[in-house]
Amino acid sequence: MKMKSYFIETILLVIIVSPSVAIVTPPPPGPPLYVFGDSLVDAGNNNHLQDPAPKANHPFHGVDYPGNVSTGRFCNGYIGSDYVAMCLGYPQSPPAYLSITNEFQTLGGINFASAGSGILNSTGEGTLSLATQVMYFEGAASNLSRRVGNMAPNTLLSKSIFYISSGSNDIFAYFFGSKNQTNNQFIATMVNNFRLHLTKLYNCGARKIIMLSTSNIGCIPFIRSLFPLSSGDCSEELNNLSIQFKNETRDLLQNLTSTMPELRYTFIDTYEIDSELRENAHQYGFTDLTNACCGHWKV
Ligand SMILES: *[C@@H]1O[C@H](CO)[C@@H](O)[C@H](O)[C@H]1NC(C)=O
Ligand SMILES: *[C@@H]1O[C@H](CO)[C@@H](O)[C@H](O)[C@H]1NC(C)=O
Ligand SMILES: *[C@@H]1O[C@H](CO)[C@@H](O)[C@H](O)[C@H]1NC(C)=O
Ligand SMILES: *[C@@H]1O[C@H](CO)[C@@H](O)[C@H](O)[C@H]1NC(C)=O
Ligand SMILES: *[C@@H]1O[C@H](CO)[C@@H](O)[C@H](O)[C@H]1NC(C)=O
Ligand SMILES: *[C@@H]1O[C@H](CO)[C@@H](O)[C@H](O)[C@H]1NC(C)=O
Ligand SMILES: *[C@@H]1O[C@H](CO)[C@@H](O)[C@H](O)[C@H]1NC(C)=O
Image 1 (spheres, rainbow, N blue to C red):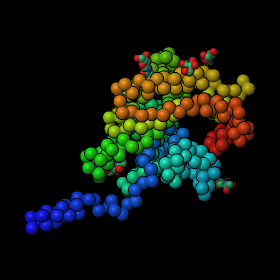
Image 2: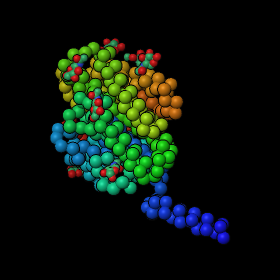
Image 3: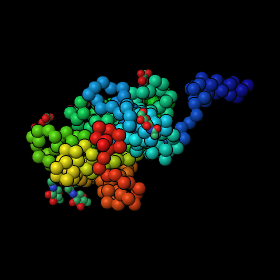
Image 4: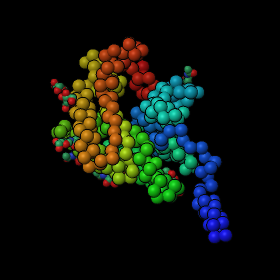
């Protein structure tokens, strides 16, 4: 008799406690993916921002995206955050944070990236700075606690992938700005701010980070268009700043492992990949290295 009533109580407890929605929502195919950064990974957040935030909601952006539609991606087709998501079993990038209307859209993660934004708050007027993106993530993480209880979110977050690509726009802003500091001071400021953002993410439960370095930013079509008379070459000064920043980002991650023992990271040296692609373009199927695919500097 005692036994029986115990069982009934247990069953009642299970029915009451388990969230009714969990049964109808299929689990995501892979670990949740959280994306932070700039136009290289923005899947549409800037469409929801006012000017002067840059937008890719017009042709020929998306000309190779299914349906030939511009989605806010600064690209002819899918972007890096889409391909990483596909590797995890998703059809494309998790939804842009500002497009979310229902929390259940966020089960596979969220894309916080904002084109034109940077590691420094002063970079990219009107965009979501990395600080703002991290702040939005903190909100999402606390929603997760509310939804799944206090212990589970940390388990979930520790399995999640944090994909980060930022820094180029800060270097551009510095390059075109007043240069009231030395390169070393500027890079140190960027790295110190980056450390703060990464520390917040870790303290919120992030454990697995994929970090993309800045690339050959002195070679992008916009920069080349500024030097048409000097043979349209790359800006060596910008490339040097990029190399210096990526070297220090790699050191920063390595250093953080001493204070963040559970941190696991992959550093992707985009600069080296970019250089290899440029040197052996034809081998990789590229025929045009100087013109833009779809933005303002398309010729
Ligand atoms: C894609 O759309 C643009 C404008 O909306 C159009 O000019 C272009 O021809 C289309 N491209 C393809 C491949 O359908
Ligand atoms: C950057 O902005 C965030 C909030 O958006 C703020 O918390 C932080 O203190 C700012 N950082 C600096 C260095 O001003
Ligand atoms: C978090 O919850 C609040 C309150 O329900 C909601 O307004 C907000 O959109 C949620 N954010 C995310 C990222 O789920
Ligand atoms: C340099 O100028 C920028 C604004 O253009 C300012 O935010 C920054 O604090 C200045 N840095 C130094 C070292 O004075
Ligand atoms: C870039 O770095 C290289 C190697 O350190 C150096 O030789 C070159 O002078 C630098 N160029 C500029 C424009 O700073
Ligand atoms: C960047 O790191 C590479 C490899 O570790 C090194 O050869 C190079 O001198 C470094 N460059 C700068 C500017 O720090
Ligand atoms: C990493 O740690 C080394 C040794 O303590 C230090 O010299 C270097 O400045 C640190 N670099 C960064 C980017 O934190």
